[in-house]
Amino acid sequence: MDQIKLQYFGEKFNELQSSNPDAFLSRLRKEGFSNFSDKGLPTHKNEEWKYSGASVSNLFHKEYKLTEDKNQLPVMKDDIDEMRLPGFENANELVFVNGKFVVELSAIRSSSEQIVIMPLEEAENGDYKEIVKEHLGKSNLFINDGIHALNTSFIYGGVFIYVNKKQEVTNPVYLYHILDAGDNHILSQPRSLVFIDERSKLQIVESYKTIGSMDSFTNEVFEIVVNKDAILEYYKIQNDKTTASQVATTHVRQIGKSFAHTLVISLNGGTIRNNTNIIMEAAGNEAHMYGLYLLKGKSHVDNHTLVDNKMPNCFSNELYKGVIDGSATGVFSGKIFVRPDAQKTNAYQSNNNILLSDNASVNSKPQLEIYADDVKCSHGCTVGRLDEEALFYLRARGISKEHAQAMLLQAFASNIVEQIKIEPLREYAEELITERLSEVNTEE
Image (tube, rainbow, N blue to C red; front, side, top):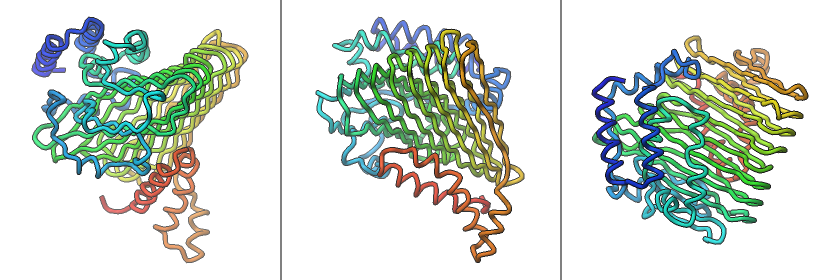
């Protein structure tokens, strides 16, 4: 990190601290900026960033501008309409503009008896202040790098979501992240805290869109707490411009025996890093983690996952799949951590990849770190080409090479897509994937 950029971030940090002097948030931001100043941006010398650190650090050679006051709205209703996801009529739609939650552009369709959605600062100073103080920032304990600390340094304009006890929220929460890169390279840093209370259920979906021809960088931290007997479904679709890069952390803490289901689909973008953490803090937790990355051009997608088993009798199943074409790069680094008290843990992890061109590459690193002796854990990865026999079989029946490839790849991806439990969203994802797979091995 050069001195000019550190000075710029320092000036913006001081402005935020003086204009938003809340004691708790100010202390949290101060700790974050101190950590950011010490560590700087990640590099390849950091083992956790071995394959992506240089790519992320190089992005900051550009003159990114931090977002300004959230009351300045550079987007119009038409911009939101263009990125609305299927099923939006029955969803709670939360709009973020340049990383700031904008109430005026959002639509809350569930009753307050089921779910409470408000600006993070309002929650921290109101009835939910104890929940915010107890749970905001807990991801700092697991992700100790400069890029995560940078987000913490600028917590402002985030959203707080609370699901009341015994409430199955039938309206999913759609988060639309809109970045206005019309005049400057933009740095967006959204922050969200979700608390799902006992015996409740919530579905969350995130999507992203950059407006304008300049570059955008999203540095997001999304913290979710799942209480006893609660159910979380979380979905993320990344299909932005090639000038849009992102580091996104989804940190899920299962503080009671509960169920968590996460799925990330990466289709387009520049440099993308997804940190998906599941922290099992109670006995009997269950979690399922899925990912699909279909890459072309010079895209770089790094999926970095952690399942931390702290207590006994927990179960987790993780499956990530990738199709890499052109000169794109895929990375998968997943760790299953079993602590001494986590006896009877069942944990499975798999990463499967197909390379479609000689210039495509993938780095896969599944890991187990086990300190208990009565567990069932497995991990593995595969990297290869399309099945030539299957391709020959289809072509021998009059199917073109391109169509045959698309059929095989569709079958490869299908068991990930079918894990989307929101029907209109699943159909939408299938359409996006079909469109992407029809482009394989074509000129970029």
